[in-house]
Length: 427
Image 1 (cartoon, rainbow, N blue to C red):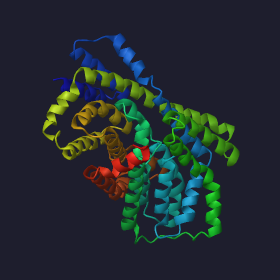
Image 2: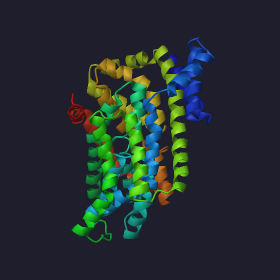
Image 3: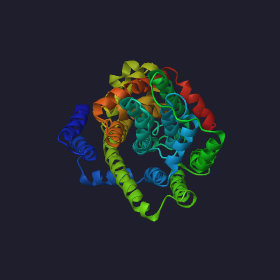
């Protein structure tokens, strides 16, 4: 009965058009009434406690780092270097999109920010060169979802706080799967676009490549600084976010000299608006998470999945299938916040590595950014590229299938995630 109250109140509130954060609070009130323990003071205390988290401070600073990176010219130089390296091969701008997506993902951690930057710069170039625009938009969309997987990942920060899992270990465990996501896109692009009649860019000379590399070295140094600093224990993920923001501002203002004082206000406002929405969602979700635990909903879900608890692979398939379904209707952060307190007790009961599950969970939620009707990343590409949604959906399908195929491979062979993660974390 409690499970039906939880789902019914949540879906009912969302069906009435309430924001997801408000729907989570309504769900919490409904659970309290069901348990005959309604107390507004406890509700308020848990709401405040949900946002009172030092690791969550990484979210606004990584958001700000992404805004400063775009305003300061770091994103443009990363793409320019990728064009110099691979822009001349057949379908070269597609490979540029993937390479740039991998590098930018290791700086901002925001799928929306990375996708918007890639689409704004690359889609006009691809249109002028004669590329199939729905397919190009689909590739850029699929490249954008690498950002939540490669560190620094805002999704890992939110999941780590909600699940009580080391954010640093999640960051390090996401490196190899994120690179594999890029490799899957490269292979898929080679298959679907190898016969596309497009104009090739002129092969860059060694001098031009060197010039682009020197010009972009400051942007490329940021991922190494963040990951190296965390692995060496110099700073925590939260401190890494501050370092990233300060570094992006310094390089944009004093090295590239593109970041001006008038750019600071819009960058701060965009970061504040996005961060405020995320933080309120986290706070509201913590109220529901506390009541989910009190109501023992994970145990009830575990009873439903009982026959699968002895088979980790089948259990992972079942949980990932649930995430895929939920991800078609909910955005990235709400899905993470709603399902984490329900699934984590089952993960621990089955003896699944929480870091491995966290990586798989975030990859799956990132894929949800490509699935309609919500498909946040698809909406960004449609708006920036002025391409109808139905065409972008058709264009993204081969890349969506490739990412789902990679997800299935990682379920069947978890060592692909766990072995590099243990090596990188020194465990």
